[in-house]
Length: 163
Image 1 (tube, rainbow, N blue to C red):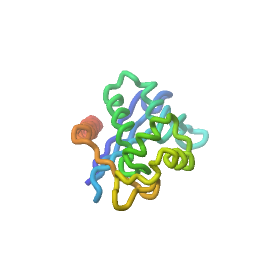
Image 2 (cartoon, one colour; image 1 turned 60 degrees about the vertical axis):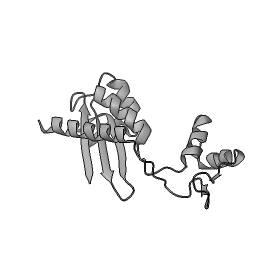
Image 3 (tube, helix red, strand yellow; image 1 turned 90 degrees about the vertical axis):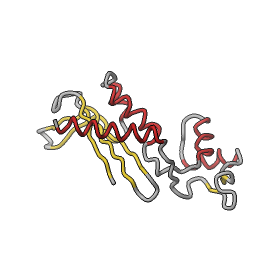
Image 4 (tube, helix red, strand yellow; image 1 turned 180 degrees about the vertical axis):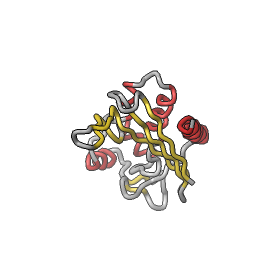
């Protein structure tokens, strides 16, 4: 099962126009959420293509320009918590530790820091076979209240688009 919606912000075709694409799909692991956008985009006739200032994970920039939009505020909150919740390199404990160190630098840095802290192989996550950071993509379930919020947002945005 898959749910999709696109939230359009600003005046279409004019400077300041942005859009956010939402997708929630159910696979064998469970529900997986993704959100991405195009910030300040418009069609450029001279190059016969779309031109934009930011694309992909630019939702903070879009929110900066459309800060009054309540739907967008909720999307950004959920995006920060659950975007690509089926693609986590670390266990919850490993991720929490790395986040406590500040800005993530790169994979080698993460492995070094986790090794220093005795968390590179997380035995708490899997006692019989400690999980080594980055050795697989781990799934994190979206809490029921946030899953309901995502479904409601997609339904609401889709209904608006049809009107």
